[in-house]
Length: 157
Image 1 (cartoon, helix red, strand yellow):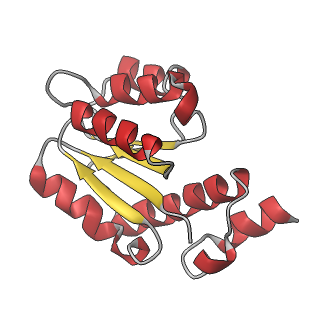
Image 2: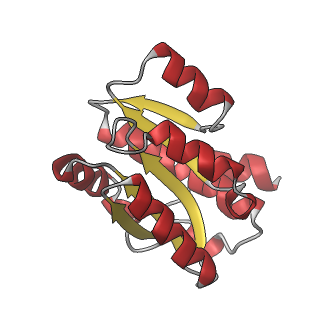
């Protein structure tokens, strides 16, 4: 089974831990990485790409030191290596202008406000991971237990 990565980015350790805890049901099928800054995320993405691993989903906070989540997600969207990466902005402090930039420039797939509902984050992640796997032509059968069945059905019919 190919390694497919989910990267979670937040400068607050307790928030990062909460995101990873909400995604725990996916951990047997996907590699879940934690980054505490945009720079750490970019370095990790470069390493994973160099190793030929898939990066399916990046979930990022917005307000972080040095580089915001919108800036990070925009750079990911603009990098030809990562065009297919699904993106979630998870924040409580984005302005209306930030949100517009996230949609128009970062091409985010979903926006969630803090405090988020863990089941909603998990469900959205499953939908986006299903979309990624099908779009990349990857084996979905070995991950059926955690993919979103309605999304999968819609995409493969």
